Image (cartoon, rainbow, N blue to C red; front, top):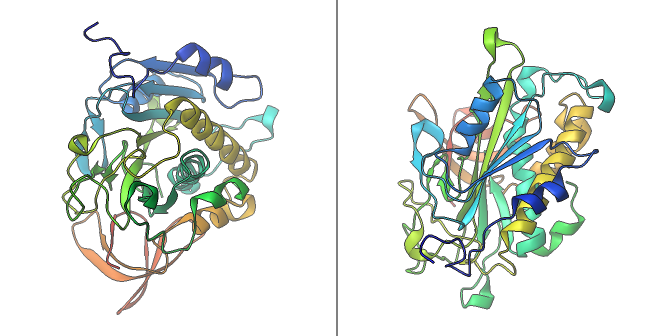
Length: 349
């Protein structure tokens, strides 16, 4: 049947009823799940709901996204059912006495996209069984699997996908990798420098994250919308183009052990729920709740020479030494130590 979601058997549709039954429970963070067959941007949908007074816990998912937004106004369009495009609505500044959650000070909101990155890399490691890691501020990198005839160099940190099961778990919109998969700093990924099939012997980008702040009337009850996208079954010809040259890939092209989007989405949302609960309980203190340790452990940027393109248009070159307690990238440069709250990062080696 033309237009049927079952015409491509490699890309079955998500089942909203089953997802709601699995994810919306009394103890869960999630309160409502909306599944669109097609939408412009899941982040825009969640932001509109936030401005209308939607409480914390909304999940917006789209089978196809036609106007996904990334950093610096870049856009991205995803093929139908080839990936995950999901946005969640959070209100970290609102106290929740029933959960013993104090209000989190706005300066700590910058940890939210990093928190989502940790949940994402854990979910991908667990289910896809790939070598994967995070590029600061929040791109998901994978290393192609030798099982598909492409030798894997592995992450510079020495991590492997099999370690995932044992791992613990800026201002909104400032530190973000992109709202949808294949993005680098928000723009679509690409095949520049890669092999013809979209896989490379080194790192490639499979996902990105975008955080946006949303204010209500008079600035009251401000919210944060986290948008995540993952290239799951995109084929080589469908990969977007990235002007920065970092190759894009999909979990399938990289040799994932499983590419079922349903369990991946469930694991991702449960991971965000778990880490958000720890972070909220700690009043947004990433050190106290273990989030800082988890992010540093999963970050492939640290220890590498990088070029950072800053929002004002200038750039910094140096060695990424650590991520500080505020989530900023700490660089050792020729002119001394510099801290970066927002920017597009290019790994030089």
